[in-house]
Image (cartoon, rainbow, N blue to C red; front, top):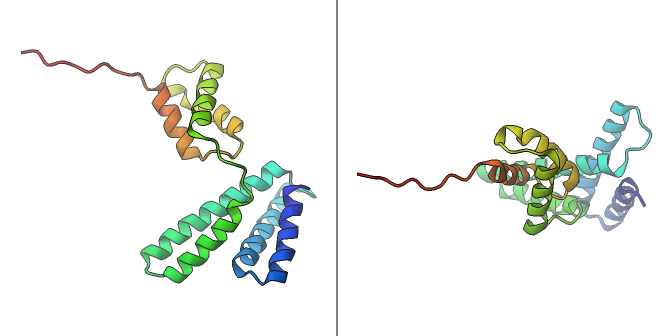
Length: 158
């Protein structure tokens, strides 16, 4: 069963269960999928494309929840968080820190990068290898850390 089919099934289940958060999240996600299909002129998106849309929707929920909390609207923040929690179920299991470290090291070796200036090529490969199992910010920080030369501590004389 494709991810898109699973979303369709979950929409039906949410309707039957009268689960407002799940229903809202799946409806919005289905709308985004339909828009993307029209934009690309495709009948069906593959799982990778649907996964990108899920990640984007999840990111929007997190950001909205933060804004609602800042605006002293806890009920709306809770609703966004509930929808976000529902969307997380579609994402693959995230990589462990050790797996992430290995993935970045492998990407650096494959690209032959030596300096932070070559970070773009490493990031492109690392993101492809992670395939949605790690967020870009974490990957970026790790790549930058690995490509930044370690300078020995300086000693003061005098």
